[in-house]
Image (tube, rainbow, N blue to C red; front, side, top):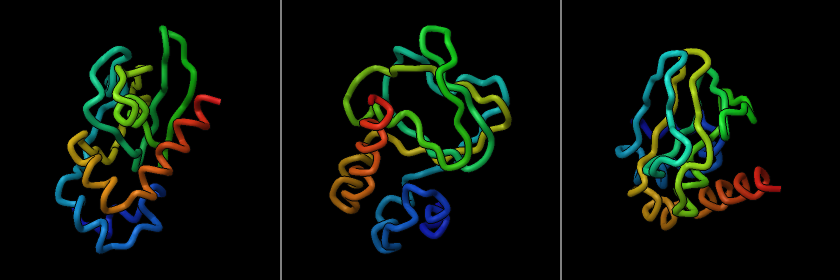
Length: 128
């Protein structure tokens, strides 16, 4: 993925492009049709996503707890805290998202700690 494309995502908008160059080759855009389960509650936390377009619902124990849209991030909590997925995320419209694999976290921690700090703040806000 082109590093300048990462700037479209709020999570990366203030990160210097030279830092984005280090992870951009290892990110990918993925697409899911409406109704597709993107992550499953209780599953392994191998990646996280930032929504470019579309929408998704977040469900825990079969109950809808949140709606997500462009700019929202999901899957980061289990990944950063090394836990199973705490919720299921289902695309409610055609969904296009940036996917970052778990092995990129150490590279991100070194190259752009501010991004991981923001992800941690997101987790704290959700848990409050």
